[in-house]
Amino acid sequence: MVVTPQPEPDVFCAISHPARRRMLDLLAAADRSVGAIAAHFEMSRPAVSQHLRVLLDAGLVTEQRHGRERHYHFVPDRLGPVREWIAQYERFWDERLGRLQKLLSEGTTE
Amino acid sequence: MVVTPQPEPDVFCAISHPARRRMLDLLAAADRSVGAIAAHFEMSRPAVSQHLRVLLDAGLVTEQRHGRERHYHFVPDRLGPVREWIAQYERFWDERLGRLQKLLSEGTTE
DNA sequence: AGTATAGGTAAGCAAATGCTTACGAGTCAA
DNA sequence: TTGACTCGTAAGCATTTGCTTACCTATACT
Image 1 (spheres, chains in turn red, blue, brown, yellow):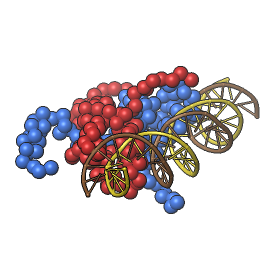
Image 2 (cartoon, rainbow over the protein chains, first blue to last red):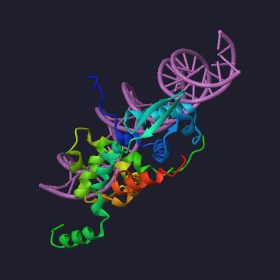
Image 3 (tube, rainbow over the protein chains, first blue to last red):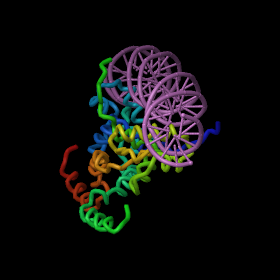
Image 4 (cartoon, each protein chain N blue to C red):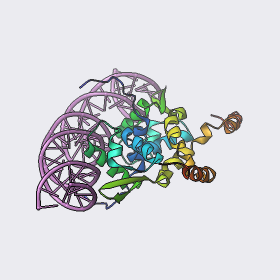
């Protein structure tokens, strides 16, 4: 097998786990240490570290050493792909465009 | 382990796979049969069926028998959770709110 | 009837996920 | 230095994911 070096750790994959989304929510409010994050979860601290590693690889967070603590910081820009992908469907929620689309569809064969 | 009957098949999970996102893109443009969808992918047709099943379980698509074909139909409403979750971060892209937040944070102790 | 087409399902498998416990490396404080 | 504390990493494991091939049912055509 060819070892693709970095198939770009997928952001969609990173946010697919509820725990990781909650971690992002926490970090969006404020930078936090691993311990402070782990306090919000039932799972073991290493498990939290592993989730943070996934977020780190996806570029969704950065870490910064602070004494013996590591503070994680939210990087909103990396949510761009998700934001853009979901934005392409906005027309389905937009009433004005919805009405326009309905008008147009009355003239189509579908 | 307790068998949770239906832990609500996660929409975030369903869209985490690139192929499934492309299938939604295709279906957003028009309803399509399985064969028509499979034509856009390298993988086997059963694999496509399995992906469609995931989308179906997540409620992101519906199927409708049409003779011996099954037409899949995009259900945009089910993207709501993703849309809402990403919307909560809009403030990070909004310059005006960004400046407001900066002002507010100067008065907090955290 | 018989045959082709559309598409779901089962079984099998390799690889990835998500957890756990055990341990190690760095930092602070006595 | 000794010990407590923060946190990452390694190893092990059960489960899930994502694919394959083989097979089945249902519809359509002749």
